[in-house]
Length: 145
Image (cartoon, rainbow, N blue to C red; front, side, top):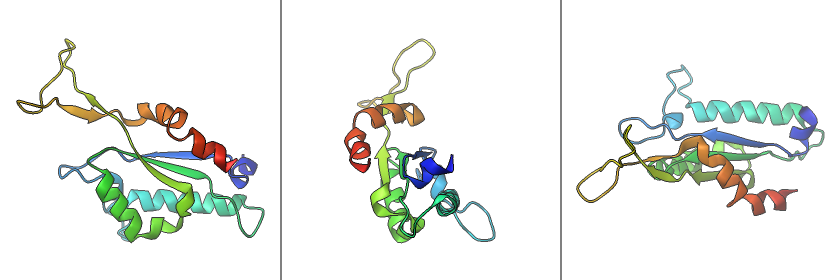
């Protein structure tokens, strides 16, 4: 349990693909708490606490955190992380990745149009995490070991 966290052999995936009507990721909006913190800040605080409790040295290894978003949520999420200095998490151990957008199909398998010229698309969500880990981030994960 805690020893794999202390050794940095854990990868945490946070799915931030859900958006509100203005296409801002819900995870970075005010969670309605007196502290005015967003859900992403609360998760990172919990991860920092877990990392602190599991650490064996003064310079502990941060587990890799992958934050999954989509093309519409990427810019607001990046801005939130920069403004809040990644909520105290190590820059080298936090990556924002975009989930692939897939066409939307109806119950008969017909692709839906978003406009006259474009297909309606939605992010693949957490289903793309395995593909991301297997393809684009394998080298980064191996370099950390």
